Amino acid sequence: MSEAQISLSETAARRILQILKGQDKQFLRVSVIGGGCSGFSYQFDLESERSDDDLAIERDGATVLVDTMSVDFLKGSEIDYVDELIGASFRIHNPNATAACGCGTSFSI
Image 1 (cartoon, rainbow, N blue to C red):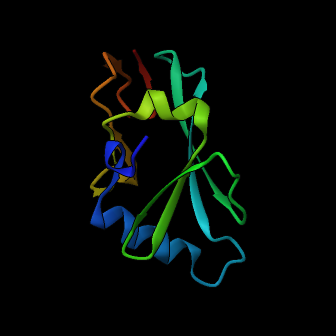
Image 2 (tube, helix red, strand yellow; image 1 turned 135 degrees about the vertical axis):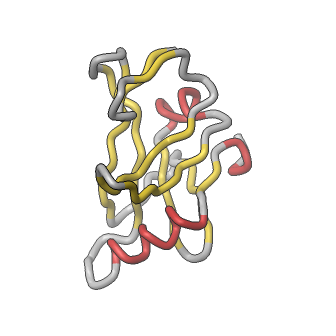
């Protein structure tokens, strides 16, 4: 799978670098796990090491890792960071999701 199938917005890359500044972690990991009100949920973790089979998406010095199990759920997605009146968060624009919850953290396929 090529990096082009999952993209990282400029805003997300900038926020990742801000979060990691001064920490011993180097990467943001995005995973898809079972659960949530719509069937699957996105999970975000900070990591210091990458696995050999991780997909690494890089932009402007920021790196996001995606494990092989999550890649298929995220094909064609954009990882973004939004700052809205109700709060700021990472958001996944996933064309594979057929339904999503109101908070945007869980989805179904």
